[in-house]
Length: 359
Image (cartoon, rainbow, N blue to C red; front, side, top):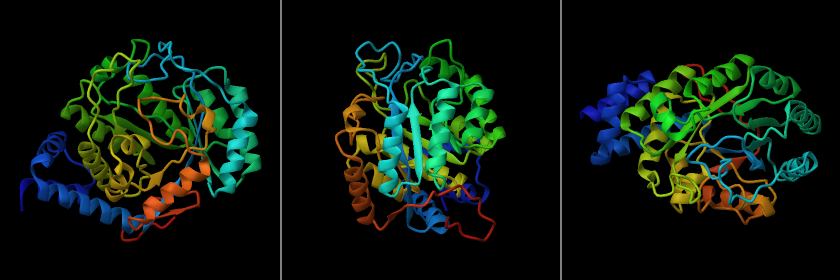
């Protein structure tokens, strides 16, 4: 058995590698098709053992593209004077939830920039309204770095999950992607606070971001292992024309799929989306992500009139589809590769050794 295949089997059994071994694996896979295929087979088998052929859907509501931060890679950064800004009202957000519920969605993801117009109390009231109207649904927030008191208030109001990508675990690399006002340590601190409060917590990183090294990716994998998040979201870096990184190349499908496979073996029970970004850089990107071990897709419930305004990167897909069209299209595409969308919440439930997880 080759060295890379031994690393894959060890990763499957131990769920972690040393940093130097992650580097060897990531650098060796592109030139070793047999090992890359073995990694894919093991990741796919692991996901099917835990979840069968079920794919969970989350209804994404992109409710504001205002942001106080100026991250160098992001299309809705505050420094982008060309962005067409918008905010959805609480009533409009509730309308999105209502439409999504009727379509079978049982998780709503409220995503936006760090827009302080939605203050602690306003968000808490909105969360409480969603919780009262849809008690059987999970409420996920993705609105960036806030104080622990804020996170606690929203948790108490009824939020269940929180998504906060760490973007890169290496502080020096982090500073190359963000303005001096932001720090890697503070973002990691927020993630630990979220877990301590009781949120099902998601993190992740961009694949192929500017200045990223294989060593950075190995550090990301080790950070995720240490954090033990319930959700892991990764996707390829895609440049936006109105950012300082407009001329940098996009991340690749190949490397993104390798990392999804590695993450599935690292955390067999994790909720891992096959992202819109992956579908943007390849016509079958989301299907390829599912076949690499991902088990979540996130159709867009936002009003069509604002979809093209929430552009973190260029050429984003599905900006002109109604929610029902988006869901039906994804369902047909997944059925074509042998999977099917399920309408339950798909909560994270760790599997006992020797058992399968079919939540």
